[in-house]
Amino acid sequence: MKTYNIAVLPGDGIWPEVCDEALKVLNAVWKKFDTDFKNTIWYIGWAWWDKYKSHFPDETKKLCDKSDAVLFGSVWWPVDEQFEEKWKNCERDSILAIRKYLWLTVNIRPAKVWPKLAHLSVLKAEKIPPTWIEIVTFRELSQGLYFWEHTTFEENWELKARDICDYSESTIKHIAKFCLESAKISNKKVALVDKANVLDTSRLWRKVVEEVKKDYPEVQVENWLVDNCAQQLVKNPGYFDYLLTENLFWDILSDLTSTFSWSLWLLASASFNKSWFWLYEPSGGSAPKYTWLNKINPIAQILCVAMMLKYSFGMEEASKAVENAVNETINAWFRTYDIFRELPWEILVWTREIWDEIMKRV
Ligand code: IPM
Ligand code: MG
Image 1 (cartoon, rainbow, N blue to C red):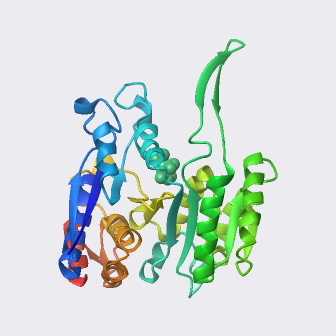
Image 2: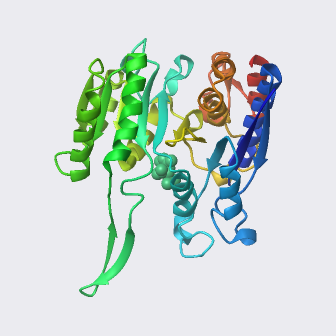
Image 3: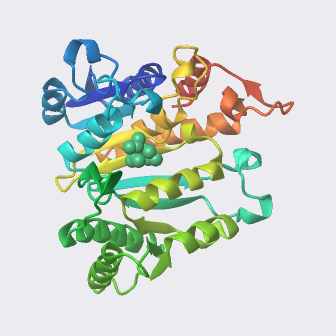
């Protein structure tokens, strides 16, 4: 029997509860597929600040180092209280710090419309093509505006702030290769999203992607300016398959595409580095006001588990079993409150009940 070690870092707010549900799914899976998972639940963010006085302590780093994958939740940051040590730079020093520490360069975020949730989508029904299942985005996660210098300083008797955007050829090449390779295998077209009419970093992206494309003559790659792309994503979403872009642009556009399925709590995401080490995180924030109310939708986190089975452990069949169980539960009209619209055939359920329904189907 194979044994895998998973570092579970729920963060704060709703995620300890939701990670709990996801781990129960994982435990059911290993029983069926003759694999053993060892989970170590540990700390990131501010939740244990009083003990560690750090948002990403050494113990957490060591745990990541000796694990086979990381299951992450989310970290919340009350912007208004940013000057207290406990909160100051909490997201930078936890979420961004772990991405940097593990050097996660590629983040995949599928945006998807489930047929039985299409009435929730912000898109009009006629905008959802019958064959359109999802747009997959490849977001560069380790460089760009988020990762270089951030400074606030005084000059000429006034305050100024500066954030620097920086990209290197090798980083762009790594994500471009992975994206084009995936596009080749699944016969999809790629939109490279940038602001090349203004930014040097965008021009470097175009140059490197053009170079990489020489090895993939069969893959169609188009250049899109980010503002135009945002407009077309809403006007004509069925046009796009794979989107490839830098850190900031996709942070913004991914929240836009999340409205296609309506709830961020339906969308999983996965990131990996050059050594094929993966971290899985749901797309939503940590919604502290719902903590331990048993109301939250655990589907994003459960789909993270499905992604982990596939990408980290090559367990395609197990991954499909989890994904199908989620799809069947949605198709059987079980709804947590975020996706419940009081339709007569919908069944409103608590977190633990929807988990139960998914488990019955795994
Ligand atoms: C995301 C989040 C993070 C990001 C924040 C919390 C730093 O918005 O994963 O999309 O911008 O990357
Ligand atoms: Mg974001």
